[in-house]
Image 1 (spheres, rainbow, N blue to C red):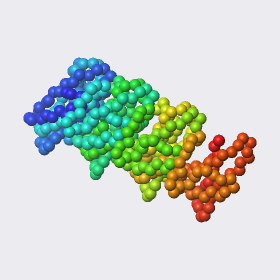
Image 2: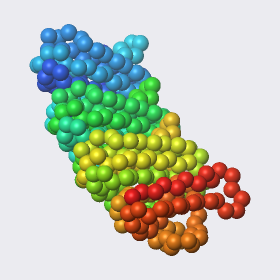
Image 3: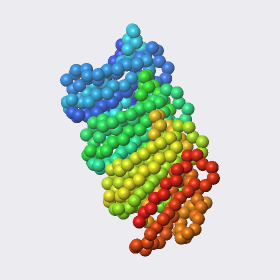
Image 4: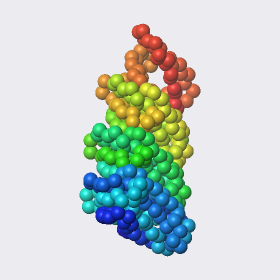
Length: 396
């Protein structure tokens, strides 16, 4: 068997047993699936895995598709037996058998999906019964990794499952849900990481389109066409749109000692979007994160200089929250912009400066003072308000 390939065959007669083999090393993570294709005659796929000594280590069967998982305890030639587990062992029909082994080079079959991942990109795929799509990326020890998978289009039985395997082949984490799933991991070692996408429905027959995404820091990232992210400008309202399983990546430069405030707030009518904002430092490590049902804020004093990364997603229980949002940065000391139609900028001593706060808003004002000057500043709401509790912060 070739790792990652779709091996097409058929059980043509009663009692037939097809024998497949592959090489594996001790410690390898092994996932195998078998799924019937086309019209079958009582074919209930049964898959059995034996180790190099001929001892059966695991097996599984189902009416349409089945999957087995095993960690190789010894190196050598492993054997896979495919047959039918119907009551009379007489079922016949065609099938596809697949192998996802790591660590190992793998194929991406023609017309199928998988291969190298680009940080920040939306990688489209499609799941068929028993499918195992394999993706890979490079990471360094200490990198923070967030990966999501989300179904697209109208699906009924597809329950996206995402598995992350380390450079030594070990499964480091996995997650699944009915529409979208997310995993988070800090890389312990440098090397090639593998991602395996499949369906976790009870019968392993889930099918449908999906997107798989990677947000890795430290690393350069792309902003897909029509998506949102990229460099942030201090003081600006950066608009974005969250889709199920989306990961929007933003970045900015900061100096050690800078005070950073960031907010994210949903816009428009949303129901399940729970904005989550994560700040990651120049070394890729998580610094701070916050979420809430409408808007969230984080504040941090930069410990080191360099490029900081902001990851926006939804923290609802099913990872399917969607809707528009604004993300904002208030960094000091630094020059800042006042967005058109917003408020802020230079203050005049003694003047009344009018402004308006919207959910998650950060209005930045400035003035020049001399050492020894006495300063008094006030902020007061105007008009009828219910949940506005004015906060004023002074930074030197």
